[in-house]
Length: 438
Ligand SMILES: NC(=O)c1ccc[n+]([C@@H]2O[C@H](COP(=O)([O-])OP(=O)(O)OC[C@H]3O[C@@H](n4cnc5c(N)ncnc54)[C@H](O)[C@@H]3O)[C@@H](O)[C@H]2O)c1
Image 1 (tube, rainbow, N blue to C red):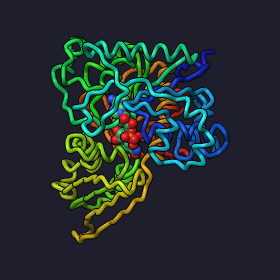
Image 2 (cartoon, protein in one colour):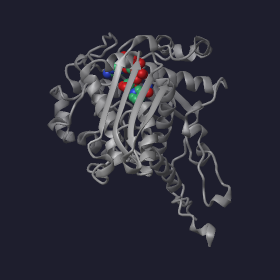
Image 3 (cartoon, rainbow, N blue to C red):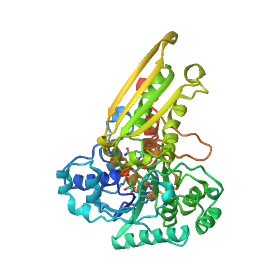
């Protein structure tokens, strides 16, 4: 008898995780995985490592760990590769980023020091504040893509990897809207030969990944793989993709609170969010063109959750302001403030204040891990194109064209877990629960 659920190839052999950008997030991810493998720490914040999934009825008491329920690569199977515009190895880059304690880094120094970034595809116009020297040159953008395709193939064979995934954890590029050159694979490829200025470096990485059959996740708000040309390529190559912009600090808070405010049919006059951030990401985002990309991503969330067109009396015309201020003394330890002006019964006004003293890369690292493992699972399960079930991880979830994104984190989580149940042929959980009262 056929096994129930979807056929999933086993997670055998090594999984290469290729990181674009070896900065604060990437090094915190890599060092964390190495530390966890050595039993020095727990994978806190990772759904794939610590999360469970309920199967069947509540009375069945069947709640396995997600990693025991679906066949995921283990941490021992992971091999890391990276590209960066700076030549520092992962140990030096992690020291520089200043996220993790020196003591911890010293305990995994050998593994980190052996991770040296490959020369990057970079264009100054897209990230004006950074000036690196570990950069590829080529006569056009197609040649740069081919160099990346070679990097991917030689990484795979040198490290004996069975499968690869790529995660963009490099700097946020300047704001870019979709244009003609993004509209089909044919014109995009011509644009690569012509070095069209509207083809961003991140798109060249994504193109190289997809051409190599490698799943791609976009942790930054850049357009990148969210264009028809690359969505079509992902479908053609039967490769899963997802993005955009890791949902970590303030936006995570927003997607927790806004559904709650709406659930109680409370109104919103305004939501003012500001941050101070002193890491390299903060420095890049200090440039207005780069901040614009982040701002668009952060702003979209409330409109979608609150649906002012459906609830005009509660949400029409609310004011939503988001600021990020570069403030070096705080490094990676961001402080995010929210002032939320709400109103209740008979229009009486109230305020909610949040002061979140968070650590950006500590929040982002487990998301990188989960995305790498879930994308690899999706690939082995034959899932291609946009993986909307991974919306849970993103501020601006990528969806099929014409479909509005689901931002409510609890719906996103339910969707993620139901997708896993579906893959394994388990009943989906609707929370109806009438059977308990029959
Ligand atoms: N930490 C979070 O909570 C969080 C949340 C959402 C999104 N992000 C995004 O994740 C990304 C990484 O954040 P971070 O804090 O690690 O930043 P970072 O500045 O520490 O690291 C980014 C690295 O990317 C490199 N880089 C830039 N352009 C490159 C290119 N074309 N190719 C290869 N490398 C390139 C930079 O040299 C740098 O080392 C940023 O885009 C950030 O906006 C972070």
